[in-house]
Length: 280
Image 1 (cartoon, one colour):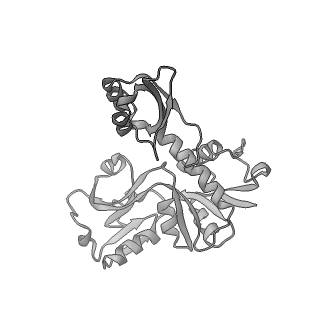
Image 2: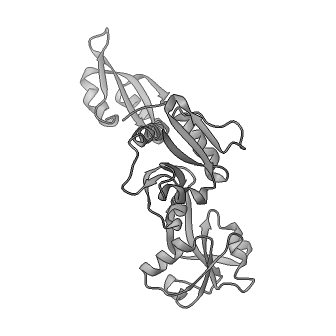
């Protein structure tokens, strides 16, 4: 039975459970449930703090888990990223009092407050910057005003909280993070392959739609250039031998542009339908 760690709360939790449900797995109905078995899929879910998931997976207690890339790297454990999941995107940045810092090199000898001390120490070590890292569990942006730190490293979304604290972002992003599926380095339960394929199917279903249209035979090659599909579009004969029906997967974000170009080319009966699941 595959043992999977799922975030029990926070920004990762709801989206992770929704994605697993789309992939065909049972999910808990009561947020107080800590363990749930899905016997039909031979899988067991453990609902844990997102920050702890990498530790359990890295120690081999659980097979795989869903957590943030930032939390995985911060944990410094024997676990690795298996699949990016495309939600809960965030950016890890440096910030300091307005006008105090312009580059990361200026942090030499300074005090840096963060909730991700493992991630930050690794980043500084790679660049040969010696600074004192102050570990805080929250409200990192208050540390400078309170005299605990000279600058901070934290997850930034809009930046409004930093501005309210009289701070500004500087330097390049430390890390672009998102939700990821992780597993223990070098040791994968073969049953995890099925989970990965299902999650990949959900990701593809989110990114593509199915497009059907009719077009004259002599225009098929031009139409296929607009809708190449993943390998090749499906072309089927129609009762009128001068026309064919074409079916192809197209990127969801480009749907309306492609429909307009197909119509201008001469395609008709252009239909778009959603993809609920797939295997690529």
